[in-house]
Image 1: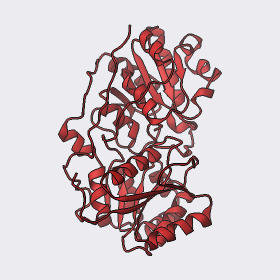
Image 2: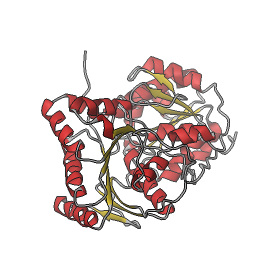
Image 3: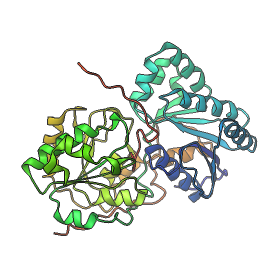
Image 4: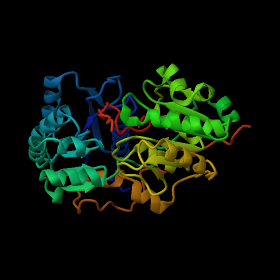
Length: 399
C-alpha cells in the first residue's frame, strides 16, 4: 500500500476488544492499519470492554457518545461506524453517526456486519423505512455480505453507494502463545477440532456438541477445543449433549485474547463454524488463511475453501467433520498473493479514508499493509428457535 498524500483522519465507531468479537477485532485491525499508513485514527468504543488503550475513547452514555461524535466531526474526522444493523440500538447509533457526519467535510461511512440484519429488517416495514432514511445519509455503505446488501436494497437504499467488502484482512494475522494446556491436548488428539462459541443459540453449540459426540464414538482420540465468552461455564451441558464419554474430550478455554485464539486455530486440524445465521465470519477467514480445513454451516457468506453443511443438521456436520479430518492440510506460510488481494479489505478502506473514489466493490489488488505470518507447530505425539443477536454475533476470534 502506498501512503496517501492526503492525511487520513478517521474516527472508528464500534466495539473494541475486549470482548474479542468479529466487529471488535476488525475495528482493532483497521485502527492499526490507518496508523501504520501515517494517518490519524481514533476509536469511539461503544462496546462493553472500555479498557484503557492508546487512541481509544470509551462511549460512557448516549449524551457523551453524541458529544464525542460532534467534537471529532468538527475537527475534520471522517466517521466510520461499524454496527450490526439487527436491532434498534444499532440503527440509533447509525442515525447519530450520520447526523454528526454532516458536521465534517468528510462524508461518513457505515459498515453493517450481522447476518441477522436481513431477517430483522424484513420483519417490519417501518424498520425498512428507517433503514432507508438512515443509510442514505451516509456517503459510503459497506455490507460484509451479498445478503446484507440485498436487504438494504430491498429497503430502498441507493445501490450506487453500497459495496460488499468482507471485514477481513490477512494483515496483522500473527498467532501468539497458545493457551495453557493446549500442548497436552494437541499431543493426544487425532484429529483436533476447534470452534468459537458464545451465549445464544445462533452459534450452534447444540449441533456442534451432538455431532462431536457421534465422532468421538467412532474415534476415541478425537478432541474438541472451544473458546469464546461463557464456554468455560458449559459444564454438565457438554455431557448432556455429546455423552459422558465424549465430554472428557471437550476442552473449553473461555474468552481468549486474539493472538492466543489464533494460536488455538493454527494448531487445530479442522475449524468448525456451526452457526445458524451469519454475516461473513472473520474467524472462518482466519482459519482459511492459517491453512486449516474448515467446516461451516451454509449461511451468510463463506470462502470457497470452506466445506459447507446445512445449519442445524447434526448428521451432515458429523460426516463433514470426519471427512475434513482426512485432508491433512499443509502449513501455509502466507496466503497466495491473488487470494490475499481478493480478501484484504484494508486497501479499499484506506482508499475511502484518503478520499479516493471508485466504483463500490472495486477493491485494489495492491498488497496488504503487512504479510500474514501464520504458523502451526507440528503435532507432538415444527419447533422454531428465535435467534437473538449477542454483542459478539458475527464475531471472530471470538467470531
